Image (cartoon, rainbow, N blue to C red; front, side):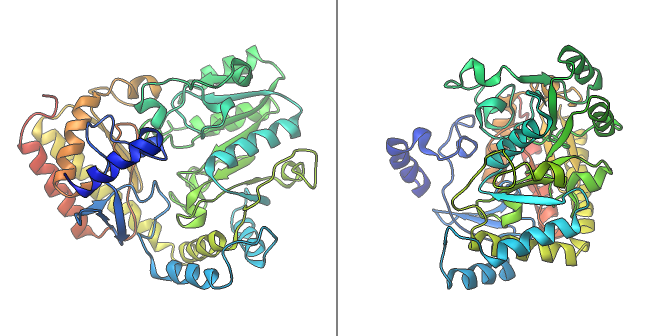
Length: 430
């Protein structure tokens, strides 16, 4: 029995499912999850001493690679002063100033402790600002585990085959309306059905919780136009795309300006943190400035802020990181696509910059319905074969692969070699 298996056997006795987040579970794969001991650069090491090339990147925030020296030093220096005060600190002011000064669509920002909390708070602020109740989201887009947004969600909910969640009263979701990603007509129809009642449309500008699904040309601008026409706010959930597709996230990448935006772990360089922000008049509705209550004892804690501010300053000062990720993304994902085509593998591969995913379906994947046509058993075979070859991927058909600046071209070629060997061994659909 491996050390990871021993740890998992202990974990299931005290932790539901043996994990503290469903996306870590290997239930869909049929094995015990790998328990990680440490990581460095693009490599991650499990409790048994096995080394893997990591394409999870702590679900996105490790854009500079694991254990980045400058960030590590900033955290250690912050820890010397104390871990948390529950009081205001200078570094959280510096973080807010830096974000607002460099992102034209964020005039004010509030720090929170997770992406879920950021989205939940942004939706509340949108309702408070507009005086309306209805929210439009998209099937397959995951916006955290708050009650009102666990409707046709993606991420771990898809993997578990649970469209919604037990324990969520029907009343909590009665004002949540679900549209079809990449289908502007479905949004227009909902707007008409709930005329003058829609507070906001919330969207992952690049859907990355049903696998990576790209917006069709004009889709995001179409949402902007519909929101303007119907006096609704447009919220970009950039928990995954923020500071990753570009320094200004998807808003910069696609040239569409949201009214509000939410961020997650990347603004803490992997520390548990999140934020939401947007137009000043909206954010001034938030307590104690306004009547929309939201609080967090440890929000903006000095250790997370020190880590995140160091990473954001580095990314802003080194735009070549983003051009490099574009190049590496093309090398990896187009390389996988070419190998799959040569091997006759039935699959569809979506990618944008450093984000990508392979779907085991012959259909073009452009929304929740087409994503669900994927063969999850074929994915499990692929995942296990890649893991045995030293490649660490998310254990779900419906999650993204993340590249970091630490992934060299040599590492990508090594990954492609492993993928080629996996294809040579036989049909993944068997």
